[in-house]
Image (tube, rainbow, N blue to C red):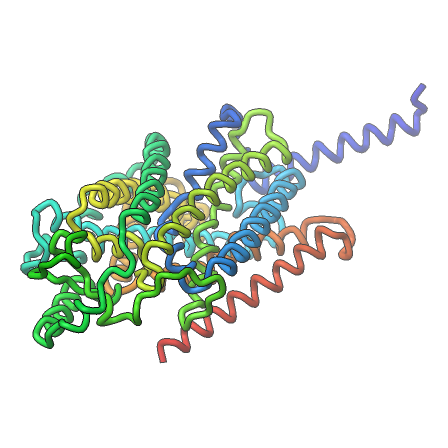
Length: 490
């Protein structure tokens, strides 16, 4: 039988647990307890949270690092990302909450929650900027192809900056103004199908694109007049994305693949290589690692998915994350390998642009560009929704809902991002800076810092030693990458 002392200890323990639950409710509010999502649906949502425009920059990253270093970094990043997800899930059990900012609040109070919210805002700004940059540079090319033109005549509907403003005002603003955009979840399947179609196209293009793209005889016979016209065309149409140019009056056997629309990449590139580099450290290698980090940055979406998972447990959600990361790693790797093996050192920072410069009139390429455009357009409001939530918390934490404030935050934030997108000339900068800073913080550094604060195990435990190591390495990558990128401007 249980003696009176044991009964008292059990009663005290239950009272302490009840007080702890009440304290959590007062600090964090009542957590959602839907738990209606199956394992497969949760994995599906996790895949959609991970897949993004990073897939367009990974072939360029491989070109700067070489195949071996790319996969070495990618495997390490995925492994560390899964480990930090495990730490987040452990902290969910310890605190009883399932939101990133609230874990920060549990660890460091208001300052921890503000830092987490700022990093989420920065990461979402980077994602939205990359989406809008894709619209800015791809939509004019799509219109050119649909109009059966090879060169812009200066009309406003060929101007990427004007088009991205129109798309934002006509489509993104109305969708982002909604208070509940849950219906956009139905686009998850479409987004994933588009990415699968994109990867299949990349593989197909590898086996239908010749290397080298231009023969030496054609390059040697180019006239100065043609070269000057190529340069002028590229400055007008593809500023910031490389120096490839378009030959509109070319003919001959060497040009049959391009249907009379051939990019003269050699004006802005070294001689095209047709052998893969196993180890490569170009002067732009610093953009490779942050691009990989950016591509696998999906930690903000982990906890909401965990909150809706049926029969939730750390091991079950970890299996969901592992399945999703494995799927995305496969798609990303196929895109990177076959994209790189198609163009080698003539890759542009955004793969779709490289296809446009090499075979603008190709129907398959056109369909892929349209699918990617539709995907990024409907994905922007989803990213903006979580960003606005974080902004609301920082600026108006105790205010009730107001349509004026709701619309005002949306308009101001989108206007600022649009200004940034209009003046940025290269998506590579977004991948590099955001990947090195906010993506690095959200994916690696913050989960480890919060865990070190919240976990009661000894400092020399394996988990804490691993967390400290990740913090040190992540901080080193951020500082080194930012310094090199900033110095590169001078």
